[in-house]
View 1 (tube, helix red, strand yellow):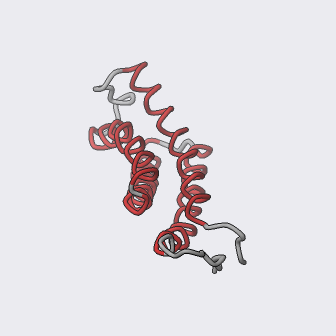
View 2: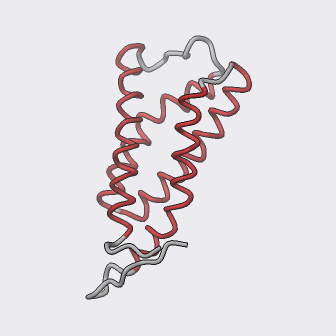
Length: 135
């Protein structure tokens, strides 16, 4: 499929919207419960990871805007790690299937789109950008 516009701005914009929603939820939880909340008694690693997402989601947004390749890499790392940690938490404590499904879907979308966005950034220095082909 050929897109009439460069992929990177579209993909990064989508990631930014999704990360902003996640960051909002993490900040809301932090504001309500504080930095050291244990999420109702879960393992400290999981609680620490979820709290750290306050920083990492926001950092990914900034990097997607200012250093796009670093932002793409961090976004990919965040969602893969998040789904892995949440799968472990779900197995240990029970799944919130709706939230887990949304995160897993976002991971699939990221893994399917990060390559074209990355390649598109390599073409940005050309005077005329040809349409990209999604495979």
